[in-house]
Amino acid sequence: MLKGIYAQDSRQEALAKAESIAHKLEAMRLSKAAGIVRGGVEDTLSFHAFPREHWMRIRTNNMLERIMREIRRRTNVVGCFPDGNSALMLASARLRHIAGTKWSSARYLNMKRLEEHKQNYIHEMIAEVAG
Image (cartoon, rainbow, N blue to C red; front, side):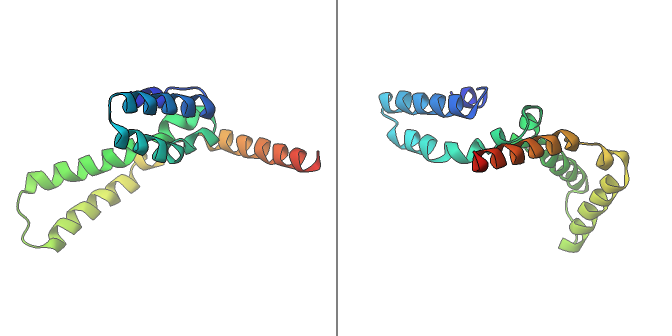
């Protein structure tokens, strides 16, 4: 049910969907879950303030998950570390490798599009204040 909230095209539609889901949860006698949906939906919809093509990448943390999975894979191979510094050295070596390869230089977001969005937002705010 919750995925339907984030599939909406606008913030208002997403809020309306969240409210309908909260009503369904209350009908199922899950009022605590309905309260959690109502209380937390505003924070999770902040990605709507950005250009639409950035939404998927902003609302997920796949890049961080990918890095953590890679570090976890490397540490599992070793098994048991003699001390905490050994584990830290392995993780930091992997992070240095990522920072030094083309993987770290790949663009995750089109910043030019974000700058255009920012300029449009500023012009809208100026027009609103002047009007």
